[in-house]
Amino acid sequence: MARVRAFRGLRPPVEIVEKLASRPYDVMNSEEARQEAMGNPYSLLHVTKAEIDLAPGTADNAPEVFEKVVENYANFKKQGWLVQDKEAKLYIYAQTMDGRTQYGIVGCTHVDDYFNGIIKKHELTRKDKEDGRMVHVNITNANVEPVFFAYPDNKEIDEIVASVVNNEKPIYDFVAKEDGFGHKFWVINDAAKVKRIEEIFANDIKYLYVADGHHRTAAAARVGQERRAKNPNHTGEEEYNYFMAVIFPATQLHIIDYNRVVKDLNGLGKDEFIKAVEQTFTVENMGKDIYKPAALHEFSMYLDGEWYRLRAKEGTFNANDPIGVLDVSILSNNVLDKVLGIKDLRTDKRIDFVGGIRGLGELKKRVDSGEMKVAFALYPVSMNQLMSIADTGNIMPPKSTWFEPKLRSGLVIHELQ
Image (cartoon, rainbow, N blue to C red; front, side):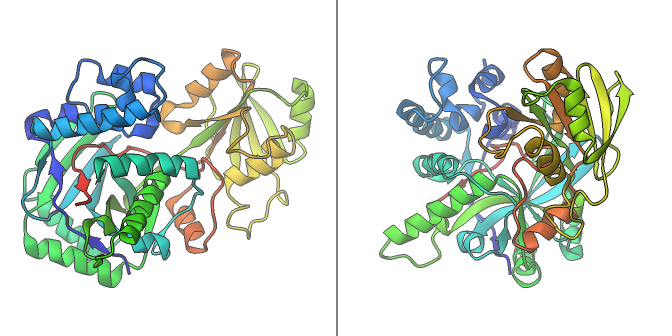
């Protein structure tokens, strides 16, 4: 069963929380972060992407960046911009997007649960990216940014959460100016409720599922594993055995599309390319207006100023294969690989990925600019598909899921000592 426990969070004073809370480090590049934090000394981006305080062009993994991380994080605490709760708490974090609200429990999950499969993943990670995050965790001695987990819905947890959010005013309540998404945050001060939530996870919740933040999860777990190996007096109760997560009921989460753009047609002309695609898809020209896929196994393609609807033909994929039946796999196998010669989505420089939050207009823009030659929009993966794949020990193809809204960093931080 899953271990979730309370912790003494570091949190910003109410009056600066909106200025301090930031988008995650990995959803923007250094220049975008520099612009977002400009004129705002409170922004947590000064800690999560400290290269913004150095000369433009400074690599985000340069030694001077890590020195700046340590300096800025210490300053945030010295200035009183981050203050630690006196007692261990669980928290509730609510996010609202397009009229839909999801309520997550903020707590600490156990390092061992990651390595023994209680915390299930659906994507592979890259060791170099894990290593970079490990450095950040070690030098700050903290999980500065949470990971994003899901759990199978539990009625009693829902009732406890409702008893808090319906009867208590949130500690934080703001709408982020960057995207218009709402963020509310409650401290669960009732010790009996905290204890009961911990008990429900320990007794009734068999698995947690990584939704977003696979590299942060792996890095946090590895830090805990390394610290216990170096501690001859390790007891298992040390704070480094745990890392911070926001854990949402699975049915409240919404995955949006994660789309693809490709630089060239692999030496084919337009008509040759379409003919090759027609071997495994029915292809219908939808004209110049943006066309969005409406069902599983349906795709839209933008090429030479026009949109096309692609429908996967029966027999071109294995409906009994949990990975092969995914639309990302169908497109990868039958178009990206077979026609365009893209064998490895993680390393091939001819392909890029566009989160659905940017809209299909972003696909059109990148093709019309001449940067890319063709774009593909996909129907989103479902949470049931994600959990089923994780339960069977399978791994999704790269860039299969995009969750929105993203967690804001800085509402609470977990220190490892």
